[in-house]
Length: 363
Ligand SMILES: [Fe+2]
Image 1 (cartoon, rainbow, N blue to C red):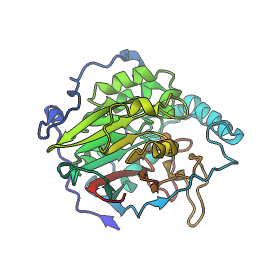
Image 2 (cartoon, helix red, strand yellow):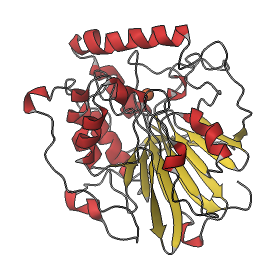
Image 3 (tube, protein in one colour):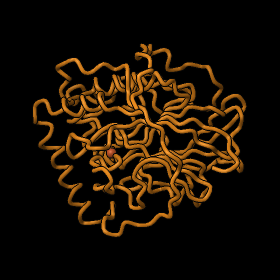
Image 4 (cartoon, helix red, strand yellow):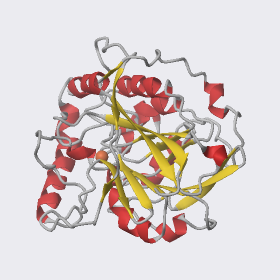
């Protein structure tokens, strides 16, 4: 279904970053500061040379009901240690580092595809013990931006401008800001400066962010845009007397995901959100009664043929995209915005997810 009633992107002045319309216990938004990257290292993919498609419409989908998962393993394709994944990852890193950046105009095809095929997937999520003050809270989940050779920074800027017209209350960025190098991210900082929500903009790192080998610097430069990183820690969000814990963990494969540390400070009976790049933290989150996990990483397979299972398998537990449930917990996996490996998605358009929280007796 075509979704054409999104208004045109609005201008977001820098001072609106600290829009004080809701009471919240989040940390004060950091003031913009100069990037710690030296000027000579600020290189990035080429800019779009032609005007991209209009930005006043996007595709719109409703996520279906949550599928019950039993965490059935994929034995043949271990995303962490399997020979196939190791080989694919090695080739991917080599191409992204040494070959793709030298191809003129390589950013153009995927940047156009992102703007043309952007999909906003929506769902109402029922959470037990959700306070009435938080009813209707709109959470925007964006993931896997993958700055680098395939993405023109201004295409990401326009994409975020479109998403801001959804007026989310809370924005969550589930990692993979980079593809392989820290310097790729610098040109995309103006895009992140557009993100603004009353309860804040929060992020965690993904495996590609760790591939840069400079994840702490990556966090530092992204924090200059106002993003607050939840690397194994949590914040308490409050709105109209309702409180919810928002926790985040480091990447499961390349970082150190410490769930217990992340969830420290949670009060019994309080609903909790967990932001994780990798959806495979879900079994452990279920064991800890996390209300809702929000993840990316899989790209939904990135290449899908109709009626066939996912070809590129990034989740060991078959948590490829969409909604899942187990015990009293739920999971939402976004296909993400960017691309890796090759600058193409087939049958698997780029996606941001807009969730509306509702109180529920049963999740
Ligand atoms: Fe990714």
